[in-house]
Length: 601
Image (tube, rainbow, N blue to C red; front, side, top):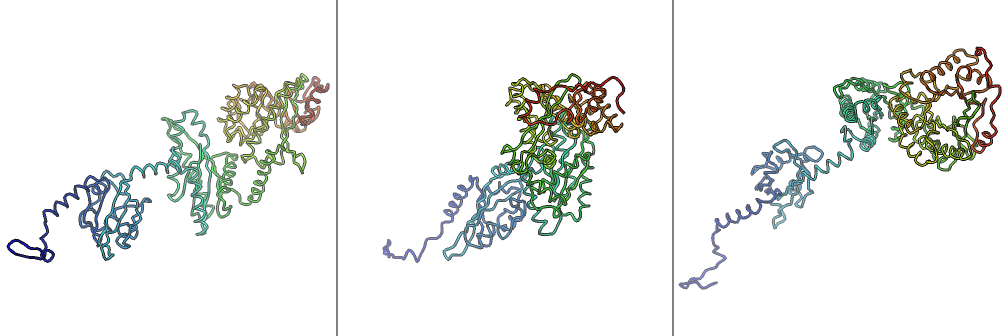
């Protein structure tokens, strides 16, 4: 008790002073003033989940929402927001609800809110409970931080990592992920799906004629047509250049897949307006079906690639389905590919050389390099035993590069020994059209500076050259300027037109040996041989006859105007170690000179 003036005494606790309302209002104003400048949004909710207070930053963040008025319930806020994936916010996991229910800090949630201008604003919402002394939750304080710039940067990085920058389609990485998901779904639900690879026919010609910008525009238009033709649940991806991959799910029959592929071909074949000019391109599609085919995504893509190549060879602007009955053979080939890769690394391949002879002047003019596999167990294997099985595999590119390099090494050695001969090598269609052949050939020539490029001749199958006449003609033109010569091998089997022959610009036509071998007995084959020789003369090309087996062949060819020949009648292919002896002892056959008179019939 305290003594008061006039002798009065009183208990201070029993008689409290009244609340100073102006002081409380002043404190509230000070708190409001402190919270107002904050960039972070701050919200206070009562124990029932109603909004008591929101600072100005909150209203700026949620400017498009009416749910932030005082007294609004948190569920109204949740209904107007979206999660990172675009789905409505899960009510049970909403941080305010979680804090009210559990009485402890809730896991933050990323929200997407539409601004007044329609753009998206990304907010990170965290909630903390306000607990009373008795342990009950009397309210919640939540904080919203604007992370729009950070999220948009992450989205841009995600876009760059998983989507093609030019077309906006998924890229190879995302397509692979979607194959995995689609296969798992198809297995669970017993559904069919198709994995397809699509390559544009004639795209390079458009790109070269109108420029890269026009080519890019064409690719974007192709991508849009693919998206318009496929269902939203299907996937079209750009996996490089003018190649696209398709994933088509929920197929009931193989016929349904064929119907979809036919629609795609029709859509892509319609004309495009590029640089105010109407251009046309078509597509070749290879497809394989699950569950009829393997469940391995890489194998599915490999099989689709094989089928696409079949469509190309069949004339383009069509689709081809992979035949599952060939799977066992493909598996065996896969093992062979590994064996060949191993053999290449172990140096088990060798080259034999077949001479080319000018029978009119009686001199050797060149050599053709022919690959052999010196198998450690099976002995010397001929190319027909292994090359056809890997012609669609990447290993054939490495093998072809080795052949060129080894042939150039042998050419340099022979020249130093006094035999300055041209040397020719055969290039597979896959290496020529899909293996960056120009860059690889440049690199090989750069390593063999002791070889004159004019002494190198690249032999291309006529059928391979016709797969993409524009690309092959550009390649030939580029390397002819460096001195490298090109020959069309097996000429007469590819049905190329005179226009093709003119544009390809090859230096040499090699008459297919089947026509040469049978020309003495078959007037039709003789007419083809004479026709090829006439074409070579008309287009100022050299001509070489393969398959010359005897003296009659030589005389007939000389009489028809073909002077350069090769075949068993002149020499079999020789190992490198036998070349010098053969060349030193070479002498023309006196019987080669055909007597005057008519050609044999």
